[in-house]
Image 1: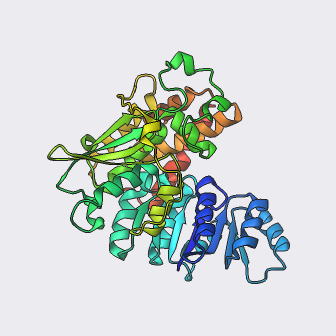
Image 2: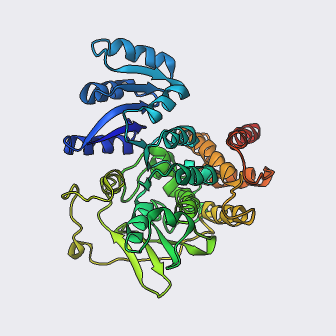
Image 3: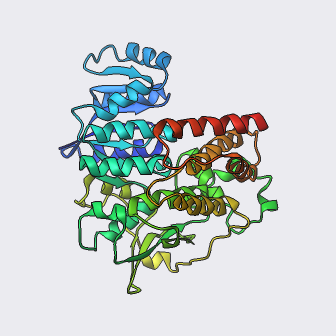
Amino acid sequence: MKRLSILGSTGSIGQQTLCLVRRFPEDLSVVALAANGNTDLIEKQAREFRPLLVSLSDETAAADLRIRLADLPEVKVVSGMEGLLQCAAIPEADMAVVAVVGMIGIRPTIAAINANKQIALANKETLVTAGHIIIPLVEEKGVSLTPIDSEHSAIFQSLQTLPGERASFFHGHPAVARILLTASGGPFRGMTLSQMKDKTAADALKHPNWSMGKKITVDSATMVNKGLEMMEARWLFGLKPSQITVVIHPQSVLHSAVEMIDGAVIGQMGTPDMRLPIEYAIRYPERTPRIADALDLFKVGNLSFFEPDTINFPALALAEEVLTRDVSYGQFTGSTLPVVYNAANEFAVAKFLRGDCTFTGIADSIAAAMANHRVIAAPTLSQILDAEAETYEYLDSRA
């Protein structure tokens, strides 16, 4: 029995993780749940799974939940960052599923690692902004870290064909020439900047293949999501910028691949269903009977691949700049530049979803914030959080 603490239980990844718990009740259980503010849904989850601990970001919402769950005295309700940290490090958990959105995931991930929990990571920002802190800590504590993102899961699965402990992949593998990081291209693939300028949030949220949360769906439309995945892959697999190639693959069947030094390419294919990488991350190295529709190659028919368009999707070009400049400060020391890229995107996407920013203005905001920032190499956690706050302040002053 693997006991889970699910951080971000009311989001897309969190809910799909709970579907797996329902499917395999003899193998999986829930000891803690944490969410932002969906009180109604987390109450239902608490009643169904009876965790020991539940956390909400807002104390007022937590107080309301305590009243609602008064008939379940075994369920303790906490709040805020302190509550999130308690859920991450709860002694009864074997694994923390980190599925919160944004840099708020850094501190609970660190807390879970320090508490010797296995980590199933769906939060890109944790490694993007603090990979130089997280990876050494994972190795120091000897805990496992498995990625949930479909692309990184595909790479991770492909690397299992190579000899050696998977922890060594954090520093690269001599047999790996590069990774091929696939992207669907999102709903605006093939469009020009002028054609995308007036696109609304409703337009951007119509992803052709995947069902995801709003923020990550917008990130897919701008290609920011792929940029963040490039930065995350650097830490997960010990790669140089020249070893990361983005490939547009509209069908979303090949989820990513690894090219070996002898020219062989090993990849992972499947239907676009997030339950597959979630299940693999949680139950690794085991595989279970089919939990999603089988991939029917006869129905797929053809697979196509294209080079990314960094002219009309400048956020991807900016991510490449971040990765190259960041590595120049020291491949495994990191810098505050990825923090600025991520924070500027979060700020702009929030405005876009409110109707206060154009679609193309998202990349413009990232570029402006990067140009304004004075880079700090090997930042501490405090400096990372300060860089995030300074980015928000700068962009707010421009509004």
